[in-house]
Length: 87
Image 1 (cartoon, rainbow, N blue to C red):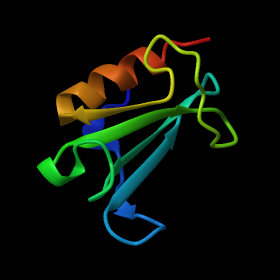
Image 2 (tube, rainbow, N blue to C red; image 1 turned 90 degrees about the horizontal axis):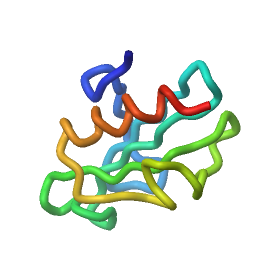
Image 3 (cartoon, rainbow, N blue to C red; image 1 turned 135 degrees about the vertical axis):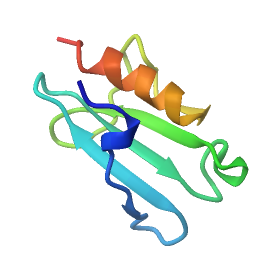
Image 4 (cartoon, helix red, strand yellow; image 1 turned 90 degrees about the vertical axis):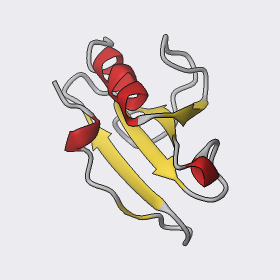
């Protein structure tokens, strides 16, 4: 199972901050960002969105109904573990 430590962060495409995108076997994935504009970014925390195989945000999962912010690395791992089990 993939965890926070497996994410490969790159510069955020809009400028300030970083982003990691990872897709999982069952069709879902995550977009994890930390920018001055993301929820918790100024505090060194992360924002996560569940995405589909095309990179679009999924709004109806047990993890989130959009984006969820103010996440510590261990919180991101917890969400990733749940997402990898979604069907």
